[in-house]
Length: 575
Ligand code: DGT
Ligand code: CA
Ligand code: ZN
Image (tube, rainbow, N blue to C red; front, top):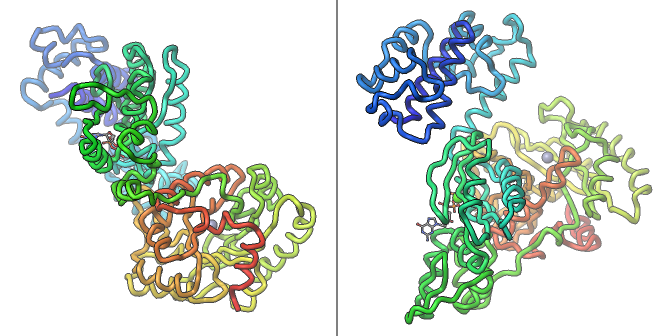
């Protein structure tokens, strides 16, 4: 049995005792033992063989006896009895964020709930709200918690979730004496929409103190491996990371290696070999043994006769061939974007007024902003009726004047593509709007033919300018609608309808592969934040990264177009 398995057993005991309502000091004793076992630098089994279990901090006589029983028999009589009383599956419920043992006990005693599935069902059928100390709000929190927990159970994390954490880690490393550079690597640097583990590279002459400081951070749960150039850890939040440390003279080869992808690197190493070099994370080595050290990636690619390949392209999707033949795209950049064409205000479910959103957009350097609040049929409570849509149009007029010269304001809608395939507003209303985004939010589990038909209906409406987050997927694990994407693309091409890359990192929809296909077919793309609050304007870079992964150039994306060109394009539609 590993330390972790032993620790898990004691954590389980503590959880079950807590649900049962046992006195707190006993519970704490088990938790302390679990903690101590988790952080032990040696195998408990070795210590057991030496007869010294009692010397482990936090392990007293009673716990030592239980460890002994577990290691001898693989079982624990005490736990068997306990779980006959309190079902083990209840412990899983404690992993739901913000759900404590008292609530778990309440659900179990009143409704017989022992599993996550039963709890989810009860919450969905409105059975929790009436229990003592609960209510609608608490019930909703339970549901949100279950969803968060289910998301956590996949082994990939959305890029947007790891991003702030990665930035903290980079800042920490850069603050250490001896570190001259620190950069993300791996899928994080390639800006994949989900990340397995974080790869981070630091440049320092002496790696030892850097590794030491890294693993001694208070939020480290486990050190999985440690060497002079690479250390792997798991943080207490469940994120796993690898830190690579190399001297700055080798930073280029190291970064190239650690950035991957593996398939890209295989191709690059083959090209290096053709040129008479063996490429490693340390150097380019000639056949006679001389080493060329590269402090930058540019030098790595240049030495083997290639232009620099941006990290977002390094997926072995033709980028190496394109680099060889000098046909790499000139990728769109964040600075190219001037417009946001899909945003919300407190007229629907946004959290800020139109004025606040406009001011935020100006502050972020946007010069065109479309306000596209939800239409009525989306059951968010506050979607706009035709009447309120027209009131909003009036309300925007003075703001247009006030901010003229700073930003061009467009009045639009994010119109619901309804379950029966019809649209929320009639054509004569759509004709009065500057811009129309149509999106799918409901009945998205319809069979492929039906849901595709709905989408095609929207695309074929000449007033619809943009399809928002086309598949309506949510990362990491809500699959999008089962659309026939090729049919969607053909219709968009025929109608000249733009397809969105929604920059919200929970969405990134279209994804890189779909967006690339759209570009291939000459379909215009948009990159929009779908901002529901001023802070969301900062999410734009995730959308740009996705577009870069799709090989997008500036002209492929409406949001980069000069305002006259954009307005002309909008004016030409719907006729
Ligand atoms: P992830 O973590 O699943 O999102 O994906 P990556 O791309 O970050 O891959 P990961 O973490 O397994 O490895 C990080 C980088 O290290 C990878 O992009 C390239 C490099 N690498 C790892 N293992 C190998 C290997 O066996 N061969 C080569 N050439 N490179 C490797
Ligand atoms: Ca990784
Ligand atoms: Zn929206």
